Length: 132
Image (cartoon, rainbow, N blue to C red; front, side):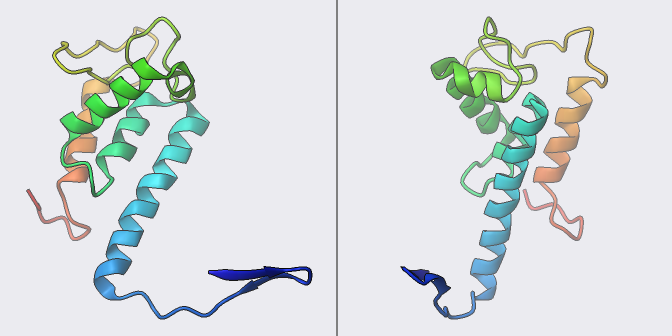
């Protein structure tokens, strides 16, 4: 919180964030940072990773579905993550009930390998222990 006046913006003191909330804030902030990178790079696989890392998204499959449906509903989102306007979903993103899309021949790394890496990253704790 802050106080905004003619003299400027003045931060207001707040209590320290408790440990459990600090972890949640770090996870949400990390997810938001990945969204920014995904749009800057126009990288649909990174966009899936960003969604999958959010604490309210419980699986990689849900992240793929959410992004695919966002892209189908709003062409600006599809463009922001690098999906062409004719695509129903970006590479690596599967709408509900559809088969996964194959990587184009111009991709520098196999999408499957990237998605396996995302899966591993979203199911491991910082110490490398599995959480699911």
